[in-house]
Image (cartoon, rainbow, N blue to C red; front, top):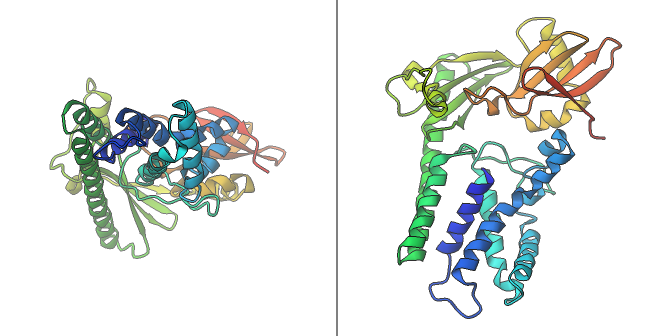
Length: 354
């Protein structure tokens, strides 16, 4: 989830959970809102690791700063920082419940997306994901903004914020229902095609909560389809249409769904053999750990032969440049090198972690 939406959700929850009657030692509502806003954004400071390199970003983003195990420590530190920021007129204990609640809310907000969050770091690097919500969901953000506006403009501020928080939770539950429906549809297709051992995954896509990407993987064969669970007729994108309209039009009604097929390592030799060899290289261990639906992007030859891989989870129709494309290149002398692919042609060399 984007950092601004995180921060706004923290401000909303801070207002919704404010005491009905302000005690002398309690935080004023405005300050409580500000603390909720800032503390809920704070876990995303781990983006700093991205300055160390693209491998470090994948390994450590949504790690210890997004961990329930580490939550008490971060909440304690943020409570002390808030105490200093507001000139020590209240003890750190007055801030701790808000900072702890805000960090927990941030973790929950990331957990509902498909990226994966290491909620037990540093004890475990397993990534968990509910996958109900696209990483940038305008409807999700709109509910928060509307509830915050109501809590500022209406006389019953706490009730308006609480109602907005409840509406947000109801929206996520609604998305869970849609996730189950999309996955059930994919499972029906797999059974119809005789893919008894196939795994089915449904991933939210942008613009509408009814837009989903359904992936059916059977061994090295992967099929995927962009569908809209509510649409009755397919929409055709038009040249003068907005980017969002064209992005949305790709998602077809279930009855008119189109399936794309991919082979994880290519469908012909010698491409397949080279791709498998490149995929097994120790330098790509970080990407094998991160990618849940890895597929070969392409094999290219030149001064070196390169195999590029990408994660199908991040395939957004209409997006020209996929994130997280990595590959191994074998030079004519037999040496291997790790690269990141940006755009279609820009190769950025990466020093593998030791």
